[in-house]
Length: 183
Image (tube, rainbow, N blue to C red):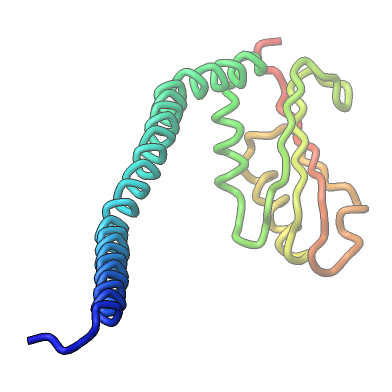
């Protein structure tokens, strides 16, 4: 039995419909929000995988470039060695470098070595070698020049006096001359 008048019944039905629509909208929005949240990990994984594939592609290109550089390295070394050997007559540049390096001590740092073939030095014809670098102290430079003279590989070993002006960290240049044996 319903004691409410007809107008009140309609107002209650209208209120019930509004509540039902609001509850449906709330359910729909919460399900959309929940769906969005559950799709976020997949989105981030896809984004990361595309970033990784771009990185792999660039790494592959870098890998191919470095592989090519490494495979070209023996040819470069060979051409440089041939150049060094062609610059000296009857004398291998590697032999000269070895003779100089074997006389080095830990207190001598070389900056440059230059070779000039068929040069006149003190009236003799041969190969002129100029070494420049930095010596930790004067004694190490003097002992280095003595070892070069005692090696009997070089015809002349000249250390300019200007190289001996400082006590420590002195820059130097040493003139070495190798006389041509075949002339």
